[in-house]
Image (cartoon, rainbow, N blue to C red):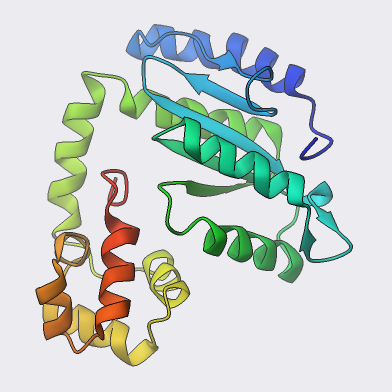
Length: 219
């Protein structure tokens, strides 16, 4: 097991709470607890999105050594689901939890796995409902168009800055990116030539392109 969280609790909460809310507001199908395929995972078939719950309190040996079974489970999850989110469950986020999240994020940087920090089950269920609702047509088409328009007015925020730092960019390089490309949308859509013009080296430019090569990156 990747942690002590009971998949039955997630299945019950998601099926009853999640389905009711989605069915009323977006006519999306109920969530499916996928314990038989990936333990602690939940799938919203109509929305085309899956979630994997990783309890940070029990996913390591000692303080920081992530269990191999957790990494193997996460890798299997990324192979099965084109659009997947890891819900990083911890009641309190200290240096340990941030370090674990950073390490898992780094290991799966080449995949399309997205990570969301949650503090309890209710918060996780709400995150799943919100994301599944946004991805459920026709809501998704309208939402993506509006977010794309908004992104053109956004500069680099703290979350994006942290992601760029994880890719190896210095604070100076991040400032140059913002000066050269302006908005978050332009950074996400930049090709390799654009990034090289911002004084990035070829390897860093390739990493950025792979990182942002995901339609959910700016949504």
